Length: 208
Ligand code: GTB
Image (cartoon, rainbow, N blue to C red; front, side, top):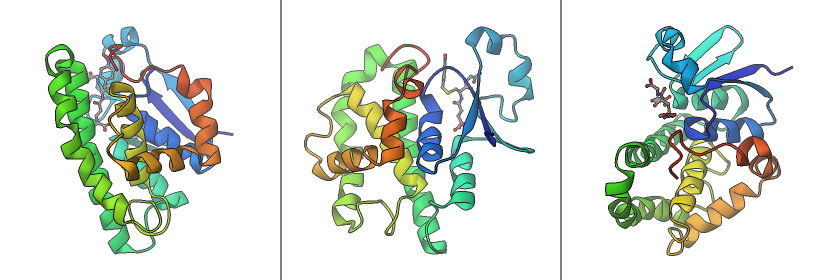
């Protein structure tokens, strides 16, 4: 039986890295899909701690804020480094990915028509940071010698950017290799090849 429940809109959105992580860890989960019409009624919004989805439940534990879900799974099933210093680095990279994600989300939802070109032009300034880190990594992961939730988050953001701009990784061989390698991990590949992933739109407004 699934021990986790994700309550969210019918999109990949902010839940993709979580779903990729659950898949790679061999965990099952249940989806509670909330339509925009249902959300607009307001009752569910009022019940959410920060007035937003996704919500993540692990038995009696109810969490909001997507990165707290990743940290929780990291503590329970691995993927949070092998010591405190690695955990700190994983937090740092996850926050770095979050900054890029927030810029992407702002462009998609508020400035797609007016800001997409400028966003893509500025993208190498962000990607080069992660390129530099992965170039130096012996394991091919952001931190230490094994995969962490920072890697799942980076993979998700890069996959979305490849849809936005298919050539955006062409000058970043380390990032290109990272996407290829991590996407090919058997359980991640199975999830990315599934309808559960492919049939969900990336964003809630049809832009990508
Ligand atoms: N920091 C939070 C986290 O990481 O969980 C951010 C959560 C968040 O932005 N939630 C958005 C939300 O609940 C959905 S993701 N929005 C509704 C509200 O605030 O009332 C982005 C999103 C935006 C819009 C749509 N849409 O129009 O369909 C779908 C998803």
